[in-house]
Length: 459
Image: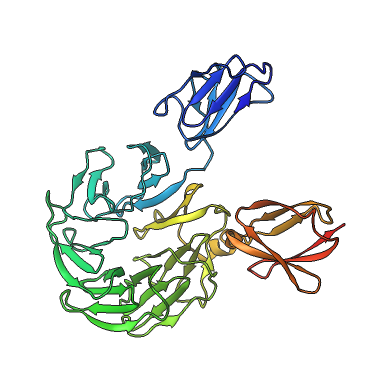
């Protein structure tokens, strides 16, 4: 609710629509509908303190401005990167084709440096593209596809009981060949590009399939990781055998990718740990040096590289590694510090046109050129952030500012000078106001998960 700065009888209330009263709330008039004029899911309405005729509405669609008392609204969000992206998909054949599913802003797609919207509401489906048409997107949730550029209607690609838990891999060498995992079953189609693709079962395993991949040079070489941590392999695309067990749990987060330049090399991530195999997944070596304790949500490979170039993403950063490196290198400079990454994709064509992109829940889509040693030294160093506590000393309210992404949604321990635990503080957001008014005067230590310690003095 907001009261007009010059006339207290004029009130505004917003929620899904905007209401206005000119008689101190005795009666109200509805100014907008949830589907038009001004975006719904409104969080605040307020006028400019410098120009009362400018009325601003802050909502899930951004910032809207009215200059006629709330009747007509226009978006004013240019330059603000605040889109809440659930999922992202990158065309495999065009740098300039990207799709994102958003909260309350539908599906938005990039075509030649311009973003377009083709549906409303929530859209959270994972998405992938085939290797035959740069514009055809495949949606996980409903097993339908469409041409983004022509904005054609969706059509089924033949799968039943589809969901975001499915995994897809399409062949680079045979554009009609596609694989999908659904629960315990691995399926394939040999007419992916047809009007009605048919899917046949390749293998049903004893446990759910967490992730799988095929060799980039041999469609018959298939690796399957199960939620019970078993790794299965097929050299002929038909017969599978267990070749190893993941060194740590694959039940929640797992990625597996084969290196193209040398297909004996396979990378695997389980939760927050990265592994490398040099013998097609028979044995695994921990290569997590340089990584944080955050879960790894995505792993991609530059197939044109000759130095084993891999990128991975956690919710809080992007990392890079090649065969010359002992540890992963942060590739996160200039990325948002607080909003969490939801997807990592790359467009690779062997030229400087290649690009790495990440989507954020709350900060839109960001991109970078590929890793190079020159860029790493100058532009892609890790921005670690900081913890600030102020005013300090204090008598009551203390502000805690946290700009280290890994500390968000963790707990900090407040202990006295003797090390006795006084209480735990939930670091649920970047800026917290904590009331210490009822605590005894003295010196305290605030200990964070990453071993950061801040001294607090209460007078």
